[in-house]
Image 1 (cartoon, rainbow, N blue to C red):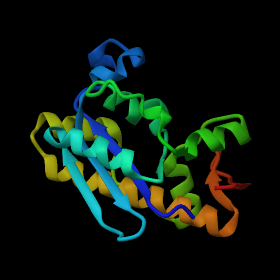
Image 2 (image 1 turned 90 degrees about the horizontal axis):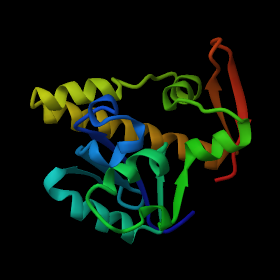
Image 3 (image 1 turned 180 degrees about the vertical axis):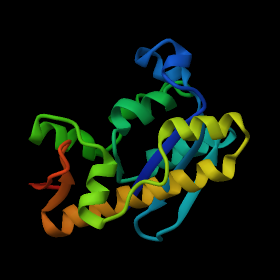
Amino acid sequence: MAKNILFFDLETQKSAEEVGGWGNIAKMGMSVGVTCHSVTGEYKIYGERQVDELIKDLQRADLVVGFNHLRFDYEVLHGYTSLDLTQLPTLDMLVELQNSLGHRLSLDSIATATFGVEKTAEGLQAIQWWKEGKLAEIAEYCCYDVKITKLVYEYGRHHGQIHYTNRFGKKLTTPVKW
């Protein structure tokens, strides 16, 4: 296990529709970012004003673990920095699973099948909360996603597999090597 693993997720201020499509992720703006440090177990919440601190913390990590953060979360952060965050030591569990299975999975399908828990909300709800000024709700939701991400990583690392529910509701298992 890497010495300093940072589990990571963020939420945005705007939807893809509001910024002209998925080709403009960098224009979505970060509302809240959250990390969890593997050694201390400490969760850290970043508002948009702390985005530089978040980027520095990601750079200090031996490994950044997330779910769809190569294609999405890093792209959002690219709206704030000229650094190529994809060069950081990264494990994107969605990418790994998509490469082995040939299709995408949702974090929720893994959490439900592996732990019997569901996500507390979804990204579009977090955007609505942003518009309503409900930062505490966004932070809580994002912290929960980071916790699920951490649990999925640790489960896969310990058991060499994860479970997921397919689109027909059937529970399946796939091997992982992380």
